[in-house]
Length: 209
Image (tube, rainbow, N blue to C red; front, side, top):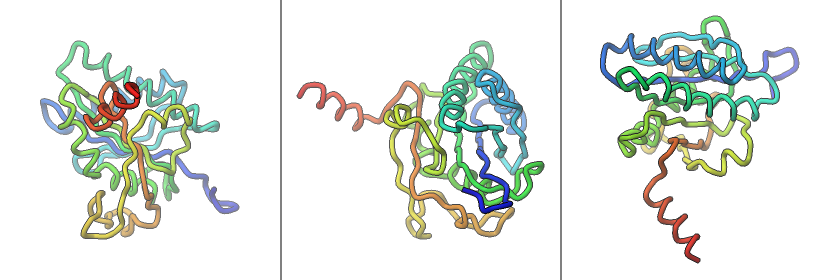
């Protein structure tokens, strides 16, 4: 909840794109996929900013946020599949976080910095390596309201603050100087069509019993 008179939290996204071709071309393709997904989810056009080898942006999600997030994530999986149907395969690592933004027009603020921080999560970085046939790995912070039935199917990731065991890398970010101001303690990892071997074995064991 934002303080009285302050701007409400925004849905912030950070994206890394893997595939053939220059980084700038892959990021451009990623924004095309996101634009298609936003249209399919009945959302407005995302606002983007390039930060090094990543794209950061704001998704125009209005209340009710859980239903909008559910629609958008499912649409993102569909849009990426359609995009890859007749082009070189694009693989996306995506982090979603709901936080405060200083300047929506330039995607600056602690919420955006935290999305970038989550993008560097070890679990998210490893997700596409563990699932070579998957083209989307999405990490959803605990600040993003979601539908309970959707989160139940995701893998929970615990995040740490200490520099020695920090799953998300350095806390410093050039836009804010302190990404910890909007830090989250846990997140949920979604890799459509794939689940870790341990999770699959546990599910099979429960089915047997």
